Image (cartoon, rainbow, N blue to C red; front, side, top):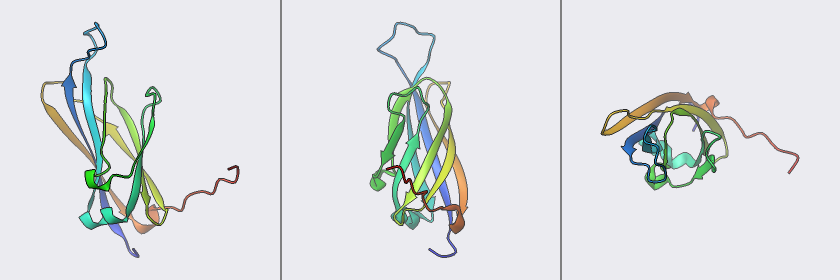
Length: 133
């Protein structure tokens, strides 16, 4: 992968849904997804996994996906927008930490937003060794 140049695309969709667990109609709830794609497409073959770091209010706020077939798709629901940190882990264990603002649609219908990030080979760093484990 010498002289690597890749565009990572972090994409989210959102759709307003009813919240069955609350009688409070003042908060809009959304079903949302986030996934990762690349240009060139074959760069996906170098990715081992993706870790999504969600807002700390989520009971499970660190979620790892190894499902390359679905573009590392994560499906969740919530009511607020926030920054999702997206860690791309390559098969050679190098990694890059990216950011994507989870955007939610305020009108009926499905909304799609993307963050495009151009990366070079040196943007993927070797993991830090944790000597306490």
